Amino acid sequence: MNLPHLTRNSIPSILAAGLCLALGACEPNKAPPQATPDQQDAPTIATAAKATPQAPAVQELDATARNAESTPSKLCNLESMDGRNIGGEVVALSAPATTEFRGWIGDEATGKRPVDARLRFAAPGNQQAWELPVGAPIPRKDVADYMKIPTLGDAGFQVSADLTALPQGEYHVYLVFGGPTGGHRCDNGRRIVR
Image (tube, rainbow, N blue to C red; front, side, top):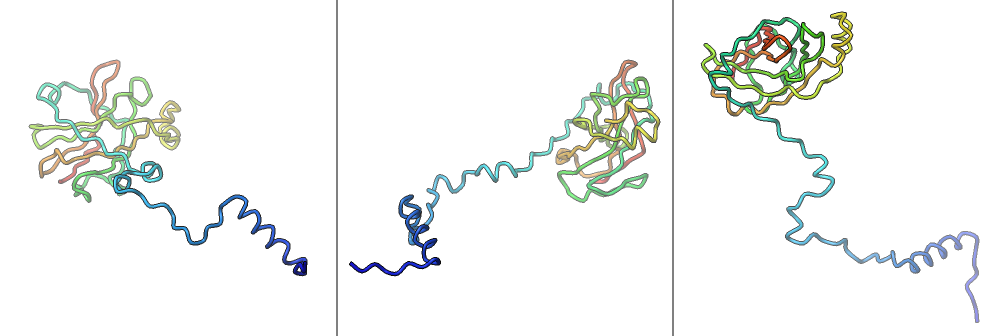
């Protein structure tokens, strides 16, 4: 029996071919498995992880909540909308439905971020108003350092709001919260138009 002459270079190829055959992994003409019709529309784990959570919708307030007494507070700043810094000018919404707001808020009585802080959208004359919570605290060491109040280190917020409930028009946007001394409103004079 004549065996082919083995060289040093042919040994790795023979070992790889043998391993491939032993494991049954080498099937060059086999196509990858196809999704069945009922699997084609189902989200995969990878796409589910990438899905963006839906923004919470603003909730309309009744007249009692809208007109409740509140004490002015100055320990806040509604800083940006959709990544743009905002000030005293009326800002047009860039996205008609979902808008991101960022800023910070503190309670002057406690020197801490209020746990029930909400963003309010009031129509002219306060005839209608909507709110939503600003969400979990975000670290803001810059605020704590600037205000010289260390307990404001988590005074930040970032909230994406679904504003589809708001009719077309101009809205006064400010922050409200409860507290040990009653309701408070923190108003930087921000206005938006939808």
